[in-house]
Length: 534
Image (cartoon, rainbow, N blue to C red; front, top):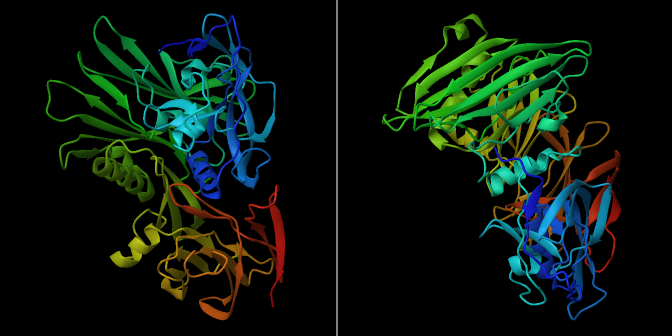
């Protein structure tokens, strides 16, 4: 794997400095378009392409708002808040040396000619006005490369940038196609320079995850390349650090044949607590491609308390062999591994994350996050052994594409927001039904917020055609599956359009007061408002 501390950007003549005014003004539609783009691709290069001095920065944008413009013919502009990730110091030979950024929080206007954003056409950075087609002039030399994560071997690391780069740009300089993608809430992605002393791996670093408190665990994927013999190998290992000593828990190494290749697939390293013992299982899947064979080998490795549980087979239909060790464990491990295998065979090299967002003795709510350019979630209601809990295919489809699934605070069941249905699922008798419906042409819906006493559920629905203020707030007072009362208010709640419509949730201040975020382009700052309910 290439290890460089420099990223090539266009050469600018250092003998003189060109200048151009920063451009901020937008129409309201252009401002919304800009926000949508940065919701999907939040990393920008703050870069004066017409200047010969620096420094410049890679910034992760987190909050975006529309406000009145101060300059230009158009009335609006977009303000961004975020974090400085890396500093790019321009040098005389046309390179940028990469440094840790000593800055913290970022807040500024998104300049349409100085804020360089990701362009999906060539996977490079261009002024965002050019990327969106809303401003073509005012740029001196608008080309830049986002530095690859393996070039960012620095103290400050942003795992999200690593993941974003993999899904949007890829690794043209790397032999492997991989990202560290764990969705486990206690797991953190690491770069090579962040591993403690004594933890070693073979070959070139690819990805790593760490989790745990008293005993820290580290799972590392690396690649061994033998260019003379024309093969590569995958090496994955797990270490435990208890504060005083380090031990190797397990290691797996697998080689490609000459002229073939081992691919560590895009679902990467994943952690998920399958049996609810607060000790996550680890899993990964990889493919060995042999030019002499019609079908590729496929292997899935699941580790539970140090025990390896494997599925081995190929891309040929029906070629799927379970390790006998599965039979010595509870069915959850075999059923989950089988589900992951079947999904991989159906969808190919899809990047996804599995996360258990709600668990009871007899039920699991599994959320699957798909990391395509379009993004999005899918849900499943499963038994504790990961078998389906509902036989009705139509109901399962509604659950699968729900916008949100929220548990009743009293533990009685779930509220499932699956436009146009707002449904319930009750634990005791596994009963499923409808609480209410919204307009079928509604474009988005927020997550559920519950009142402190657990009796009221509030959510916001977006429908520009049906609601006078674009969004409508619904408050349902619930007694199990019964709707005791329903209230509704038209409010200008905040929403944005990325790959899908996203509506900001409301918050209960007390049992009878709700706060919501106003979408008001005439004001310079976001505003929270309150509404009293019965």
